[in-house]
Amino acid sequence: MYVELKHIDKTYGGYQASENINIGIEKGKLVALLGPSGSGKTTILRMIAGLETPDSGDIIIDGKRVNDISPAERGIGFVFQNYALFRYMTVYENLAFGLEIKKVPKKQIREKISELMKLTGLTGLEKRYPNQLSGGQRQRVAFARALAPGPSLLLLDEPFAAIDAKVRAELRCWLREMIHKVGITSIFVTHDQDEAVEVADEIIITNKGRIEQTASPIEIYKNPATPFVAEFIGQSSKVEEYYKLKGFKKGNYKGAIIRPEFVESFKSDNIKFKDVIDYSEEGVVEDISFRGNCLEVKLRVGDMVLTTQRSLERRPIEIGERMHVIVYRLYAFDDKKAYLLKNSELEGKELVTF
Image 1: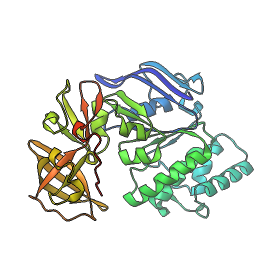
Image 2 (image 1 turned 180 degrees about the horizontal axis):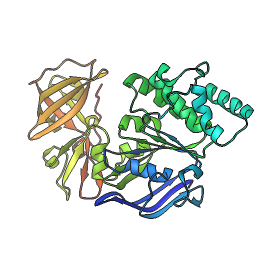
Image 3 (image 1 turned 60 degrees about the vertical axis):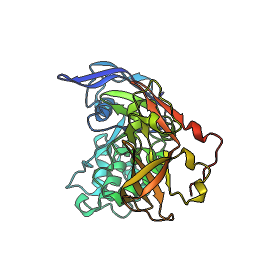
Image 4 (image 1 turned 180 degrees about the vertical axis):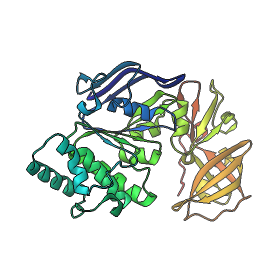
């Protein structure tokens, strides 16, 4: 592993920000620290950077324990949430700053900056000041400046938080492409699920100062390891009496998480579902929200409110309309783990949902 955190603890007064944190990150990987506010993700990032000191445990970078090494000597590039660009310096001067501190010859500085400007799509903006740039351009400058000294590790603290939605979506793809092109090990903090899933090779989910799960985005989505991950990832409905749904039996679980893609709703006259209508529940449409490429529909089934998505190509429905509802599968959970349960009534039956 290129970056390792072993048995890290960190407290602020009586608040436990990190509890027995154990992380291993491979060289060249782009990793997201994902979690809600106050989950400890930024504390982890700052300890790796050397901006915070752990109370116990070891931080290892490239096989070397760095707990007692200053931030400047760790070989780390840091991209801050607010860019932290020097307002009275041009783009060129911002990029050159770190190299000048290291007393790199001017010719090498010019060559390095020319290379970075081309790599990050900033060519022609060398003489502009930060206030003359768009948010996306400022973020690219911050990224290029972090790369200028040739760090072995790149840390990014919510790099897209200050950028509007459309530019943010474009920058996600750009950042992933750039980091893989450069080949630098990178860790970024985010509370945005979509951001983590789209950008990261691997996601580390934090909650209340602990690590809940570490895996690829697909693995985390399909196989959440804990109740928190099952509820936190995706849009989910949390229910207690899941066993009242047809096809599910009561087990030693405290409740269940049901995602929109696990739910289908249809009318009696829909011949595509004629073979499974006997296994459906009765539901009522409580709310309909337009989501651009689909409708988000909330359905009341007994005491439960479930969410599903409905294609715009299907027959329009209205609030108050009665529907048949089928739950294909769900995540049941106890105190520690989440378990995927499938609807036993639907085994061997083909459902056509388009």
